Length: 85
Image 1 (tube, rainbow, N blue to C red):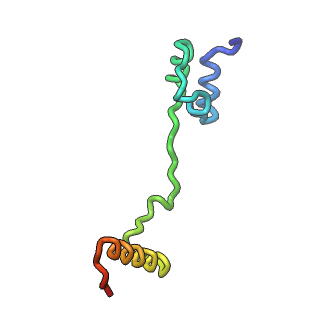
Image 2 (image 1 turned 120 degrees about the horizontal axis):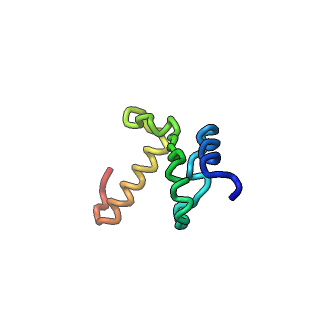
Image 3 (image 1 turned 90 degrees about the vertical axis):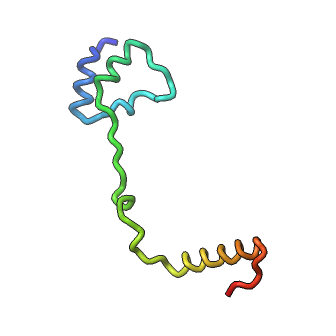
């Protein structure tokens, strides 16, 4: 490589590029590149905000309730309880 590792690492830090963009974790890196990978920024996971919203206090839709009710009735019928209204 004609470009030194320090220049590559500095440019990656400058542009906010993490080491996950260069290497696949399933493959073993050569010893020469392990040092460069360690010097680069580790990837940061960004989760969408809708995952953080609590769904416990939100009401369910009519279709969801109907689907769960039918599933419960099928389960009861399968286990031998025939009358459940």
